[in-house]
Length: 334
Length: 233
Image 1 (cartoon, rainbow over the protein chains, first blue to last red):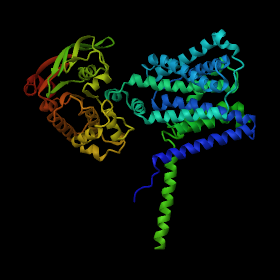
Image 2: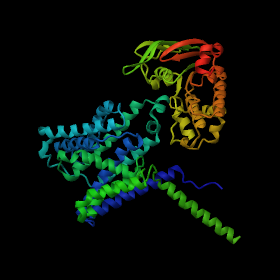
Image 3: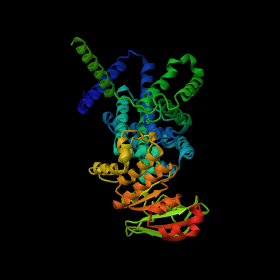
Image 4: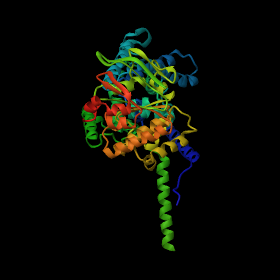
């Protein structure tokens, strides 16, 4: 018997319907005020961290490098977006997407500039140099008083980041990275992780693809940064220190390097944790550390490993099971 | 087809390749033999653009490739099967072969893959299997098959017999001969000098970065110095 399969157009329709339903339901719930302000704010920051983790996963999980300066790209995007929005160049409806785009592009450009020299290095060397670059970005922002407000911070940023905008960005980010990884370019990126010399001997321009993945990753980190700015309405350089980069990396490692679903789940858990454990807030870092140790001991590849969730695959499985059950009943009748 | 003129390669301060020249003519099998650390792999890496020579020149099919980046060299028809197999362990056999097609048209991929399968029927049986679960010999076949996907004019093989059981070594060498008779020129680097010289047309003997002997493969097999040094008496 032929195995049951859902056709490709049908898959797209099911997935898009579910995404639209998710966005609409989420928007209505957060707008209705049912959840209260604390939960609404948490949902938005979960979305922002999902983008950060999924984008970092591109360069750690798929490309197999270990950059430690993700907060730096987030900072570039945050300040670029905030300054653009504060300038009031465009009317408000066009301003939000334009600001996000500006933020992403600014971070991507810096990503390329940093990536070209940094990606000649590997492993721990790359980690150290990107860590350095991340800190340099933060220090420059700290001292560029006239543009960024320096250590005093940048105030009065329009607070655009609601559920709708943040989760639209989450979906765009996930789909874009998913499509990149399914393409011929994605294959090239994966082959670099698997074996760089072999990739080179297959005729893949490894430098080009490394910088490309890095720039993509920076682009979405920049967008997350702008959403972050639009969520709080106030930016201080201290938000983008080394610990933030480490936190994002921790999400990726916990979720499983190379698993987008893992990044999404881990970002949701780790970002929401403080809210649900307010009483234990002092012990938060201990709990983080314990979680990480336990996961590394029992599932070193992260919660989901490199497994990726596919809704259509799940549906196919369920329907196949139904069909099998039915044919069994028929056999019984006969 | 391939001409290497007076190249010198350094690893930092170490002078690894000292003024080496040799050539490979069309439809030949040429072998470079020598002990560990003689510089055999370094020469192949320099030809395929992974390392750079400080002096001299390398020409392939009449064009200079000294300053060509390695992925562009592959595109010109010079494929390198690196030492130690280096297949993409987490990809399936078929995906590995598809990666080999990277510089070529997608439309002709399937006919070329069938071509590879006629040389390596074992790979066809295992096309869905993840490469990391293949045996050493099968991985070597996969690495060679992947290189063949780029439709090379010259195939450079770096120690294809490394770490394989004698029976498999023989099988790999049979396949090399088969590829050669189907029209691929081969530059073979080997520690297993006896096997390499048996199938080769010509050979070069390398010692600590210099070519000390160059002759027909048969003459080298009979040469006393070579016998003592590499063929065990």
